[in-house]
Amino acid sequence: MAGTLRGSAVFAQSGGPTAVVNSSLAGAVQEAAKTDCIDKLLGAYNGILGVLQEELFDLRKERAEDIENLKRTPAAALGSCRYKVKPAADIERITEVLRAHEVRFFFYAGGNDSMATADQVEKLAASQGYELRVIGIPKTVDNDLAGTDHCPGYGSAVKFNAAQVMEAGRDTEGLWTRTPCTVQEIMGRDAGWLAAGTGLARRVPEDAPHLIYVPERPVALEQIARDVRECLGQFRRCFIAAGEGLKNEKGQYLAESDTLGPDAFGHPQLGGAADVLSAFIEKELGVRCRANRAGTAQRAAMHFASLTDVNEAVEVGAAAVRKAAKGQSGVMITLVRENGPVYRSTTGTARLAEVANGQKLVPKEYLNAAGNGITEAMKEYVRPLVRGEAPINVGPDGLPVFVRLQKRFVPRKLAEWAPPAAKQ
Image 1 (cartoon, rainbow, N blue to C red):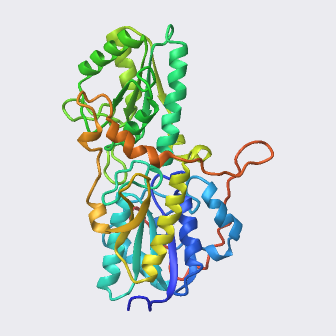
Image 2: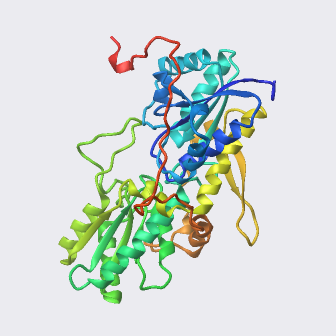
Image 3: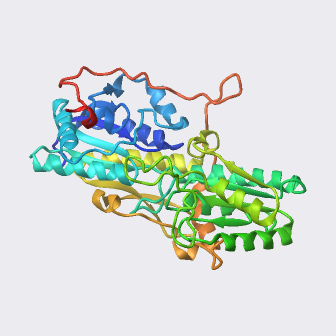
């Protein structure tokens, strides 16, 4: 039946937004508008929750210029969520909603957990004899999805973080007589791709970051103290880039929260590696140490997004629609780095189940032997991903102009959904 299926399409976004996840949405919606087999284009409000709650809006009623300007707008224009679907009741409800709206194409942008959800939906629909083509669209600044060379969102987040390290590093350099140490905390619970990528900012030894610590390489606080002393002796200042999921020599998170508990997917919530390291350095070495944390600005910095990242994000969205139209299902679109002196990427696919059950960590050859920095191989990997400056729309006040979708909701066809916690 490949190529003969016809029906509506649902697009949804999940998890932490990025600077370019809307670029993927724009690419997918624009490609779908040219595809004969797709009738209605529906957006799910707040990820999979929008499907469960049957909160779907008509993307064909959005202005064409607004869809185009999604490529210059950060975060999740459809709305996102962090919700772990329940294997039986929730998945049944999802397929019920998709059937009610004659949805035959489901596109889900997200990370590992989102790919697991998409895989569940595809398999249940198949078991029910309902032909539904499900395609995952990769999205994460953590860059930890299996099966793809890199993830849309990563290049822009690295570009922003590396620039922040450069700027804050010069601040430390200018006032080292007062505060000679700075710890910049970088996103990444289990994968240190972002923190490692800031090493691109160190063009000469004097440049920040002088030390880089990532979750993949547990480190004792005593070793950090030795590293900082050596750095202070050499430069009279020390700038550290630390992944938020940094672990000690026992493999324990340095900053796991005692009060927040795990998130919806059972992942530990972390409470501030920069604060822990800064306090330790001040106590152990007797010098002032500043703790910096950019927070969600790392993943929403459209004003300094990588043009390479935006273009690749658009392409993976468009590729998802093309693959579905040709009959593929149960896969996530991947980025494949081609060999050659000039950087070029193409798209491929990986099975949703393989992505959901895998995790790509920073390889050993990208980290130095001392465990406090990166190698040239890491720089070669990340350099092309940050190149180019994505265009943005600027208003008369000198600030960026971001689009907001109108979200004209379609009528519900089913009874209201009650979350499992609310059921008796």
